[in-house]
Length: 113
Image (cartoon, rainbow, N blue to C red; front, top):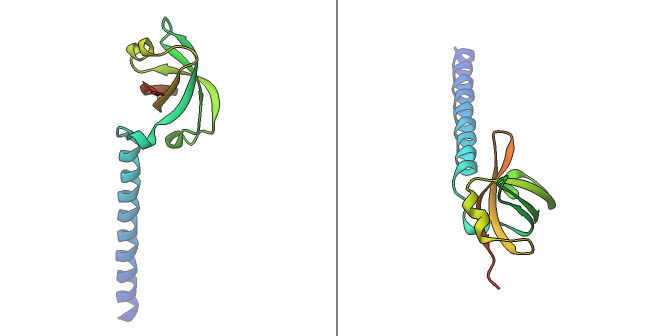
């Protein structure tokens, strides 16, 4: 009788643990896809703006949500209008995400001196 109760208790605990793991995983996903706050923005320097191709080259700091170290790289932009407000040499803050295998700038704002 005790073995049956122990097995039932163990099964319930394992099931609860699985439900908690699913809950934590889904919480991580929702954080990853929600709009970023100002503290989540990454600072960068604009190296090149290519309005025709809707791309921007940024020398950026660590991008935490992408687990990406500081580097210089080319990003696509979600909205070409973002490129109208910056030029090479500008200091900016931005958010980015990986969408369809490409790194995409979602928000971009010049840093005021």
